[in-house]
Structure formats: structure tokens, C-alpha cells
Amino acid sequence: MRDKELFPEDEIGNALWQLNEQGVTLDKEHEVAFSVIFPSQEQALKFGHLLLENGQKLSFCSYEGNPELPWEITAYPFMPLSYENIIAYQALLQEHCPVFGGQYDGWYCQSVV
Image (cartoon, rainbow, N blue to C red):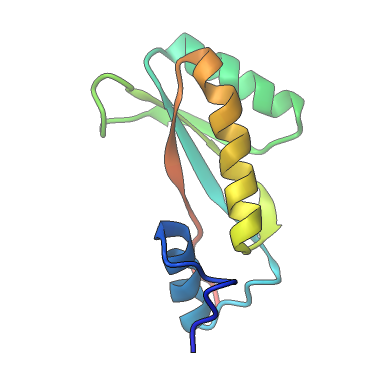
């Protein structure tokens, strides 16, 4: 039975619930990919530099999903897969990326059982 406290009925809660149902150990640390997209290469790189200064593993590439925001920075923190952790990291990115013209674009975790 789904615990609504741990797995609220929203996009993040649903994704975590699906991982849980696949047998993923959520309290174990996993590498999670959080993406932010930008209007220019320069702005993306400046944001990426900020993440690097804070010890984050990241990738940088072009992004074809939005012609107005064609550059992507993806951060790869390791964390237990909890609703609170996902929300907190997402909020951190959403707080800092607008200064660089960025827009938060979501998160992903490969399900490894």
C-alpha cells in the first residue's frame, strides 16, 4: 500500500513510488541527474562553474528539446531517494539558475535493483 507521506501524489512522488515498486532501495545513495536548460552557452557554462565550485559532478551539452533554451547542464549528486531530498535539490537549482537565464528541466534516476 502506498504511503502518501513518503510518496505524495505528484510527479516526484509517483516517480519515487515507481522506483520503489521496481525494488530499488530508496534509502541507499543513488546518482540522480538534475537538468537545467539555458538560452546561451555562456550562461550555461557560468552556472556549471558555480556547481563545480560546490563540488558537483556535472555534464554540459546542447539541448534540442527547446529552441529557446538550447544548452543543458546536468548535475549528478549522490543521495538517498527521498521526496525531501529531491525537492530540496530541485529548489536549490531553481533558486540559483534564473540568475543565469536558466530553467529547471527535471530529474531522473536510473533504476538499478
